[in-house]
Length: 132
Image (cartoon, rainbow, N blue to C red; front, side):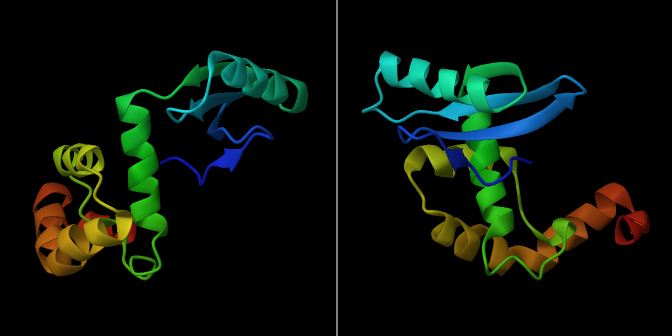
């Protein structure tokens, strides 16, 4: 799951995942108003300040991971276990693309389905999920 994004000095959000002993993989989350020059400046900033294995610009799955991370960090899901939080890939992609806010997703797809989601995960993973 993607960590909460940081921002470069020119305002481009990015995440990092440890890639190994040589550094991390970075993903830039650009917005429509960011230019190619903005992206190059952001890459330079990251290379100058971090141990970089790779830097890429976010694609669909990266945006889905960011959205999912926000669902898990939401104040209303904080006390839930992983197996109680609905993170259906199709629902995440569909709702992210529709512009559904994290608050709305949590209300509509998580909080009202906690018991159903737990039951589905129990069927899928068995009782060992309670010990992970």
